[in-house]
Amino acid sequence: MLLALQTAACRNQDTSQGARPAKISATKAYEKYFGPTPTTDKGTCYAFVIYFPSAKEPGKIVPFPFFTFDEKTMKKVAVERLLGGMDEGSYKGEILQPLNPGTHLLDLIEERGTVTVNFSKEILDSPGDKAAERALLNALALSVLQFPGIKDIRVQVDGKEKGTVGGKDVARFLGNGGLTTQPLVPDEDAVAQLPPPRLLSITAVKDKGAKDVEEVNAYFDRPVDIKEIKIAGRNDVPFEGEVYHSVFDMAAVLKPKDATLFKAGMPVKVRWKAVDKLGRSGEGDQEFLLEVKEH
Image (tube, rainbow, N blue to C red; front, top):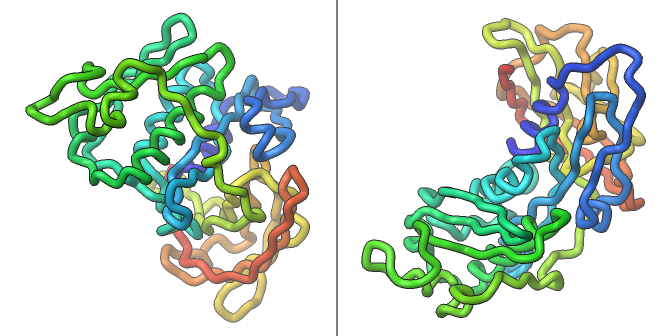
């Protein structure tokens, strides 16, 4: 899962006792769509946005928050995550992936405020849906141009901005040639209005090879203040244990009193209320099948 992996990766960073909470450095795009960042005592951290084409609103793109400790790889991560798509939890079927699954990023070069992204030739085998392609290009441009100092983004296919690759016209994907000579200009009006926060999934985590889980995570699609949460079994009896916010406020984490109760695929009921950092409130009474991941 995209968001879960990001949160888990940051949780595993070393910390020193007595470290003072520090505000996370965020792009203006992050603050626009998700408000002020949470604090962290886990070192220097960065918040940014990755946009994905919407399957529910053709031509629109949906912003999602991401966090990292590695400033140097943020742009590359943004592009690679965009290519990977997202078909997780309660967003299943809502995010469009208009590219051939074999498409991957060959290179990303930044020079004097211009980022050049070089895609593999498989991108030319993607379906020719113009609205979907335009949404993808908007998502790509906005994901990269949010970073300070970046003024332009250019697209290449197999190292070429125009001409053919394997007998296929590069200009077809790049908008009839218009993007072969000009920087990619995004349309911010293509960003869909964000709905209230939602619960993505319920995932238990255990050490590799361990028999029992260590914790159970209720992952949200953005940082939230959790006002109420009850995690229960099929009989609607809440599981006992401590519940606290995860790093970056992206999840409620249950440290179960009896870890033997949790098995992969079991139904878990969650009743919750949460408010995001811009005051949008959401609530739900949902049932999920428990995922179990090792780390």
